[in-house]
Amino acid sequence: MYNINFKVKYHDIKSELISKLENNVDTEECREDEVEDEEYVLQDILDICSKLYRDELTSVFYADHLMDDKVDIGMRTVLDKMMINPDFKNIVDEMKQYMHSEETIVNEETKHMNEVIVILSLFSEDTFYILHKCICQQFSNGVIDIDLLVELKYIVLEFLNK
Image (cartoon, rainbow, N blue to C red):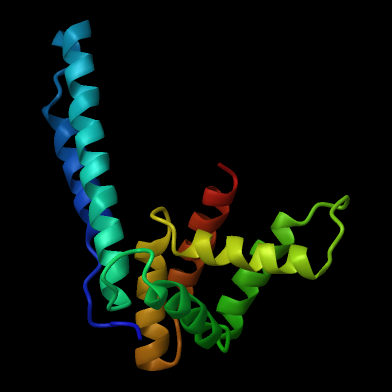
């Protein structure tokens, strides 16, 4: 169902490559045509790491591709199991509340859509690397480090504010 032994590395690789790229750029001598080349290289890093994210996401669910039912079913199953952790549940509940405005009419369709948005947000490229750590801790130890949960909450809210 979910491979907690899988090492999710896309975010660390992306951070490392971007850092190397930034450190290799001599900003004082940078000409306009070099900036275009730099952006192209940065875009390559983003594209490669995005592909790596998708590959890693499918791998943790033992799926062949993103549209594999194992991914959808796995996401829902994992989140259901994660909800037994009251601190994690609070984060998810805050996400759902964040999506409601005072004008929003809350009905079953809205609740379902919010649930889908929460699932997709948590497993998105922006947040999956930290969610995976939370899942691994919860499934292995039955508890998630509070600092990790704070980091997840911060990243999720930042993602939702985009």
